[in-house]
Image (cartoon, rainbow, N blue to C red; front, side, top):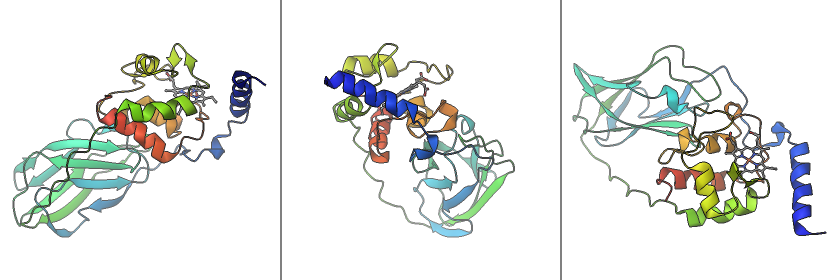
Length: 241
Ligand code: HEC
């Protein structure tokens, strides 16, 4: 049997039995969205002055609810500002402060009740974390080297091109992949880009690979593993080079 025909049959069969319950990525819509773990923990002391604050949730955070000043760090009258980063794989929001904390001071971090998860849950009420700084600093890890497209392309050709080989979603070559994904509005959710360079959490393709209901019907994605999906996410985070 010609390979192409075989591929088509396999693809159709996969579509036919697209049981979302089978997907290792499936996350059902949920009403709840709650922090499960924080670093520093509530009541924590001796927090390094330059360490990012990380909060884990029970569902992937929705980056659209994290914009603006949803997270505040206050001590007395002073406010700390920083850069927010959402990681859908770790289900975390990380807050990297622009300035170092002051040594041996108490802090209060408040999450806005509007903060929510991609599964549809909302925090619903203010959530507050109190901690104290120490006087040490941590070594800042070196900036991660961006994953080049060359590392991602073989995965996509193997796992995705069987179903996506023509416009408007052609993943069968490097040029077609860029033209179909980077900066292109999704069909299912036109307000979201398929790939928003620099931010995997705002890229519909990652929602799709994680099987989040918000991205439309569950897609049989050729058994792309979580690590492989993460490789694609790193390429996005690295600026789609
Ligand atoms: C078995 C066939 C199949 C495989 C394999 C597959 N897809 Fe899909 N994909 C579909 C179908 C069908 C749709 C449209 C319906 C839907 O949204 O689920 C789709 C939708 C999409 C969308 C959403 C398009 C939009 O604009 O909303 C993206 C992005 C996507 N696929 C990327 C991928 C990637 C990346 C892979 C490989 C990891 C992949 N697909 C593997 C069948 C497949």
